[in-house]
Length: 430
Ligand code: GDP
Image (cartoon, rainbow, N blue to C red; front, side, top):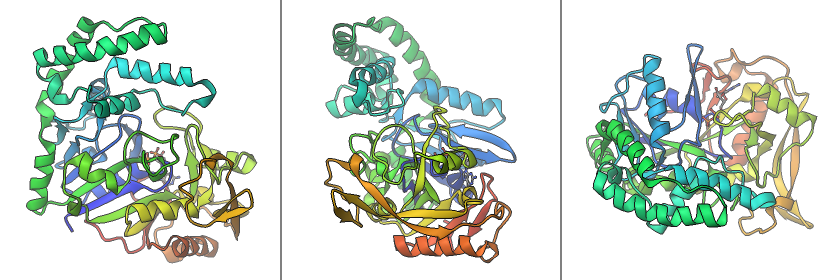
């Protein structure tokens, strides 16, 4: 099949980087369609760790075309830093294997500054942004005062647009937040020289991907963050500023919806969440701390400790349904080794009402309590297991139970960070 899309079915950090890197082997195009440098995909190859923020994970395989689509919010500084970092480690990056959409919106200094100032302004009501300017850049896109990569490449045009944007942003920075204004000339110098370095990568990536599809090339769409952080369907306002599931692909890669063929969700065998916001199955106790330590659950971009909890069936089912997932890949199953018992959230409760499907309409999501089913754990190290039947009986029972609950086949399990630490379960490559 020419297209496969992979998305996070929880709150992000599901281990997408490793899986996308693995699946990219069979792809000819790897396409990012949303998010910005707040996503941090960790890929371990031969003991070497690569953390990719904007560049699609396919870059680690020679001969693939990696596309940063129009729906991605691009910080030119971060993108170039990432390209330089990859080149320094011997990874070839050129306009032939990395393509950047001319229509992608650009993150400027004022977006980053305002992201941080707005979070400070919110105080107790903060939403836990990473402060990388992504939300403000998307807001400017919707407000039609943003600049795109193509604007950056035309110095005269860039001056006019940036001047207009800064006039308004500087008023906010100075008069509301009491901070120093951002200098237009300094910004123009900096960003136009960054633009020249980006020029070889820039093109009409929508047209390129559509042509690739017509030519029956194998295309992998790579989602960032997770379904529960989706701007429209997630736990608003504690969400990211883009559409994270398969629904984000048509607009964010400029392809018709019918080009989104097979869809696979990725979820950990437990749950984590970074930042603020509802997380019904969170464990604020020693068990949560143990998951964090065993799973090394600290943000790859920010280093922030992740909030940890048991697998949430209610949320996962909703995420898979939303994207029309054909299958699920469960990662980090190895992290659960050694727990005497495991639990999974099967229902929510609020003020005496029970919910077994996602209660999207709840204003008081933060007060929802999860109700659990308990399973016996296993003590064996499973990182070396490569066949489902070789897993401990309890691990198999847990996976089979999850599969029934989410009503989607679990097509692969991941039992460690390395590319080969997977247990296939009927996954069909591209
Ligand atoms: P992403 O944003 O979804 O790519 O997830 P992250 O990269 O933030 O987090 C995944 C982390 O788990 C990384 O450190 C990976 O190397 C690691 N990882 C991925 N799959 C597995 C797995 O099956 N088991 C273990 N123990 N670690 C994994």
